[in-house]
Image (tube, rainbow, N blue to C red; front, top):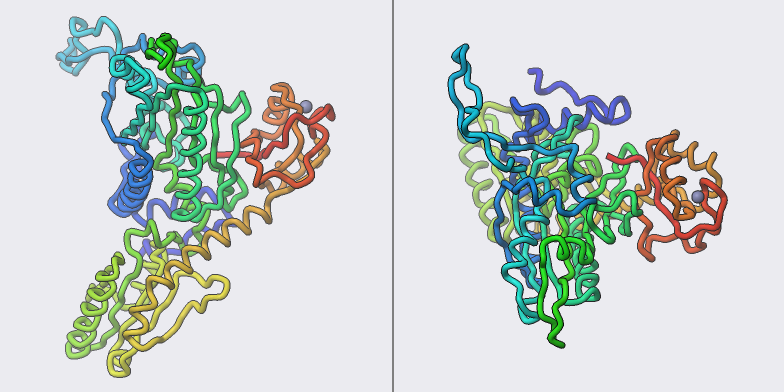
Length: 500
Ligand SMILES: [Zn+2]
């Protein structure tokens, strides 16, 4: 069967490997509309698990979900000057509301249905949300206002890749209003922390956090905090952003409140988001030449049970045991699938579930049933963990949750070690910076004078950008003294990389 053909290896063509993994593990598919994607059940299952975890984290920190419209009046987006510049080139517009048959019988927009003011399909919702906030907030007692929405957004991208860059994608966008700058700043930092916990402890990405340079920040924000992960081709993936918006939007949307001292003041806003692009990050951070490698906490199937039998008698015996084991594992809160298909032999089943990244396989044959044992096989061999082990049934069942947790942590350790192995610190000359970026790639930690000129020069010469000015814990102990590009005094250490 064509489906059994091996994947292109990562070393041969990382991009081809990625596309094959996405399609052949049935995560997503192309759509008739160029640049849009169909998220298939296996991919959507991962997204649902991600949503559940994040949603709980947001609610535990006082946020509530709401929903705002898909369409935004065109005039709204024009109000914040930087904001419109940032999004103008990728905007989908609604201009008509009705179709009629044209002279050739084909359908055309009815000229009489032309909207007086066109609507944009939201690329992000700051404008429409702060317009609503302005109506809801009168006094400092109405603050903070902590809202999140789960939604789709549209950014008309020309060069698209499934999950990583698509015209329409799914995300959450948080929007908050606060009475003081300090409160808003604290919120932006709190969300960065939530994202980091999620991306490290659930997705095992091993992210680096920091603040964006002015050229890379969100259009309309005072400051953008970001999380960057290193993919296996040594390119960076921005995994989430948290923006301190200052009073920029509050001023444009008259989001004012009466302060405790009776004065009218503008509120302070934050916005923050992560998207389905994180699924692309998981694929590229952990996958191997066999296929997907999923962290157990976001794996739709955490363990697959494969029964082994040669005749009906064995089949009955083994399936009965498989059902019992599945029940015992589900009772521990695990997501279990029993692959009872008679149309496939165990070998091809193993291969299929390995390709789909299922963390653990449990094999049960007639001899295992007779001996009261189960064979546990992890998707990957990780440091300090045997890939295969045969254990007495009760002990095996009991051991699975902890085994999956160790595997989860093992993936994070491996991703973090990989990231550090490809992080080049103390890079002090421009030649060295270029050689690394144009050679092996990875994160280049180097001094930066703070000028847009130096940032632009690197981008023009190498396509690398400043991913973040790293948070303290990621900085090189000995701070760089000079800008690696121009040699002037360094204002900060920067992490440079080519990025998705
Ligand atoms: Zn410089």
